[in-house]
Length: 214
Image (tube, rainbow, N blue to C red; front, side):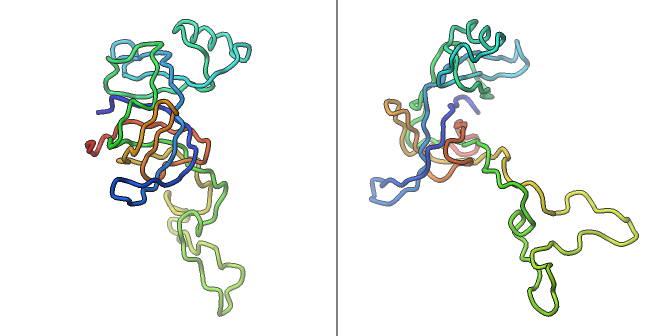
C-alpha cells in the first residue's frame, strides 16, 4: 500500500560504511520540507492523492490561478507543484509539511524520476546491437541495424521493430531500494543504490509496494 511519499532533488552518489565496516553505495537526495497544497480523495476527485510544493517562488512570477490556488490553501508558493498518488490520505491536511524523517533507516522505498535524455541514438547505443562486420567488403554499414522488413509481402515494417530513435527522458521507477539514513535537520535522505535522473533532477520517493521494510 502506498501511504507515504516525499519529493527530493538528486545531489549525486557517494558511499558510506555500515556497522560491519562494509562499503555501501548510496544516492544522496536533498529533501526540502514539502508543503501540502491540496488533499484529493475518492469522494471529491475520484482518486486519492496529495498535491505538494517545495522551495520558494516570488509572488509576482505566479499567474492569478496559481496565486489563488496557493492562497486558498494558506501555503507559501513553491518552485514546483507535484501530485503524489497515495492509497490512504487520511493522515494528511493542507498546510502540513513533510520532511525527510517521514522515512526511517531500513525501510524499503521506490524511487521515481526522469531518466537522462540521450537525444537521437542509433541501434547499437539504444538497443545494444552488436553492429555489422567491419571487414570483407562491408562499406559504411558497421553501425547500421541491417534488414528490418520483408520484400513484397507485407511490404511494410511491423510495429515494435527496434530501430534508431529518441533515447532517454522517460519516467523510470526503481523498486525496493533500502533507506540507509534519513536526516531531517540536514534535509538529506540516503538511499542504497542508484536512482533515475541526472544530478539536480526531481525524484519522488514513496514506500515500497513489493518488499516489506526490514
